[in-house]
Length: 271
Image 1 (cartoon, rainbow, N blue to C red):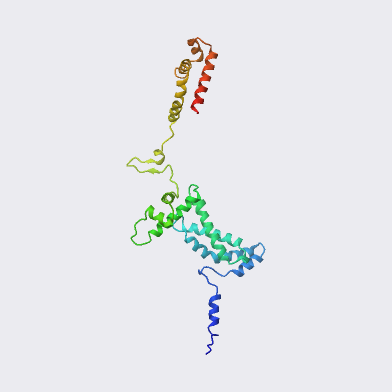
Image 2 (cartoon, rainbow, N blue to C red; image 1 turned 90 degrees about the vertical axis):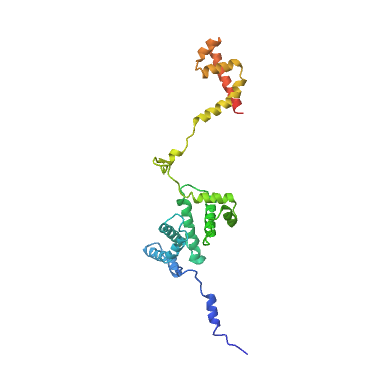
């Protein structure tokens, strides 16, 4: 028994060959791109370019929406996405495929560069930024269940495959997206003071202590007369001529002994 399938085949063929669009914001601008390529620089070409950008702008805004709640206003993100869209339109070659396949990574990359270069108050290594993103996503995914407790460092490490130290670094980066001014007031009762007031300063006395301790051993090894000359010169502030008179030697000899003794102590301290 023969069955006529002629009525069902065209429908099946149409179903398999019809273009599938994931989103409603992917307009058909192939003809306008062909026209854009054919036009010379001028008002007409600029008008066609603007039409294409306007047609694809909803898609750019949708991509920008993926990055909301990351410390940047959505309107600013849309501006960055629009800039990425313009770059995609200007660089697109219709012979290489669909515009959407080219525009999506271009716009996404522009937004990510914006976060990397503009949002961080300090230049942060790429590895730390990646850790921050992994930890942020893991914390959000682990806390999705209603009533779920705040995920622990161990939970996030197991979820991401990172070490606990890497998770800690990512958490610190989450809290270090922007800097705090040293003039910011620190609440402490009635008498407020700035953050700068809580910072210590380098104490030059530490260098003096280190130098003295380093020189002690060399001083002990000097002959008694050389030690006495250095004591009179640097601790009693006597001139070389007074030292020479007191020891009954020439001032030139005193000068040579001081230079030789100091050089010997310096060389022993540097060993």
